[in-house]
Length: 353
Image (cartoon, rainbow, N blue to C red; front, side):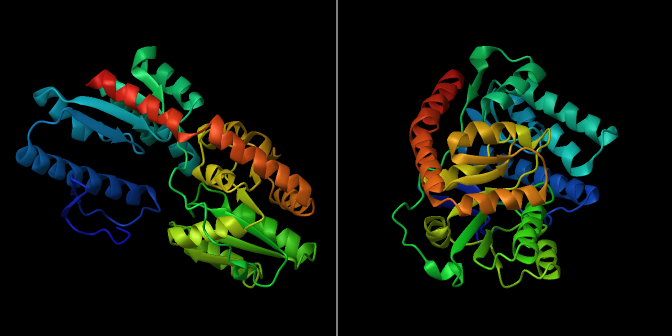
């Protein structure tokens, strides 16, 4: 996908095997097809790698979904492979937010999560709140669980500004991320409508970067709200474009709504804004507030109008924006830097070696 389509290749000495997968899911049936095709493809790739290269010492799984224990199970039982489970998201909470259901499928999701935790020799979590939940859910010992926080380490900090992104307007507000049903981008569009159409703020340009299953629907919503000229939605962009946009924008927005899932997610977009010393306007999720600290302006309810007012208030206070931006970059370089996570990751691999 995304231009990487060879079934097999070697990059920097790493053997890569790829498999076909069904289209990006939009419904329960779509998710079932996507997961089924993925599991079949991953098991086939794993068997191919095993036959060519020998026994796996370690199998590193990530989620969502929590189904890859089905691929790892035969290699652990028959070949003695050790398993590292890298918890990117709390899948039961994600499922409930996406589908609003606690029926049979939800119970199966919870069972899969517990099965994956039971299979794992070591568990990695993206933050402390996720670690606390998976330790309780899986009955994990302290020595088998590690926090490996995500943090940007390869962004091009010397990227040039691109003032053309402002479309001649004074302010540029940016968003980076997935355009999916759980990401709250519609809240940002309604916030933009409140500022532009209801408040007459013609001095603000919005740049929403990213792709996902809801991109077309969100572009349609933008057009229906009469925001085509002041909200640019280019889809997935290059790293060079992204870094120039981060240099140029006045602030970044994280519009992931407050809920039981997002409360435990460390959002990469927030850390990327902080890396470029940009303040963040966001709904006040638990982990969002921990990540951004003094770099964030928090809206404590899922209200698009209040999100818009917070954006406008920060745009109109350049000195405060600068203070918040500096605080965010300092926090990322000290408390949240990738070197700390590297040490934790290496310690986790020491345990399974």
